[in-house]
Image (cartoon, rainbow, N blue to C red; front, side):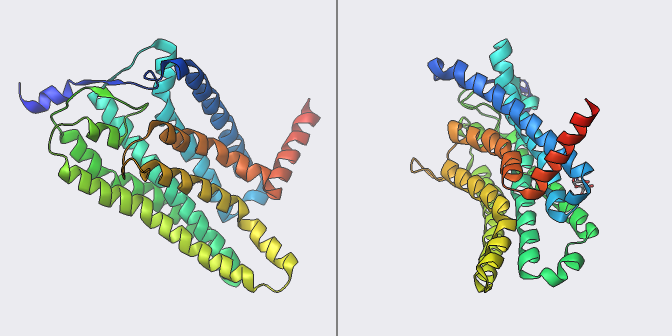
Length: 311
Ligand SMILES: *[C@@H]1O[C@H](CO)[C@@H](O)[C@H](O)[C@H]1NC(C)=O
């Protein structure tokens, strides 16, 4: 039997949170609640965005895409923890692990790209309001969204292909709740220098730092433009239109940077921060947008009234 076959037959054990045994049950229940809340919240947003004509603007178009993504992202990230909690089955086959990793990284990257597109939408709305309808027309939005999904899908190809080629593992126990890139590299005894370099360039620079930089630049322009507005009511109004997006972006990047740049070493996996990142953040999105946003609030009120009328 050659090395390749051996790897394909590997069965990994996902530790989940079993190493903190006294917290395993509470964390698992919390994960289940978070998952259900994420599903309900994002489905509500999706229904509103598709049905309410007041929400047929670029921002809500991207928010709809973000909701689809968040549902997929948490499902990939959390399904194994829920499985472990319900059935006690920690095993995951090599192929399943690679597929999980592919979707997990794809969705994580797409999350940042969609938020970057939303940042661009806010930039055009605030800094180039007269050109908004030409710059952000339906076709541009659809193409931009399609580009995000396609690019993030393709950019995962190199690191995951390389990781699937790793043949030697010191252990088959993955200290994580899903098959993520870094926990797998950590247990490999093959030479991982190339993989690590690809992860750094492709994951660190392309997938995380570039969207961060573009979003940051958008906000530099947005804030400079807002500062120049003479009336304080005008400033407030302009700021209000991007406050939900800014909140979502800040939470996401703070959580990403604290996950990867903790003092214990740059670019190490960290289970709890990763959980926050892939479970709590997608759950917060619907709330950030519905609690802070008049359009969404009034859309919800209208829907509730309709439902009441039927009952
Ligand atoms: C997400 O983007 C796709 C492709 O760009 C588009 O066709 C679709 O309607 C969007 N979904 C939502 C819910 O807005």
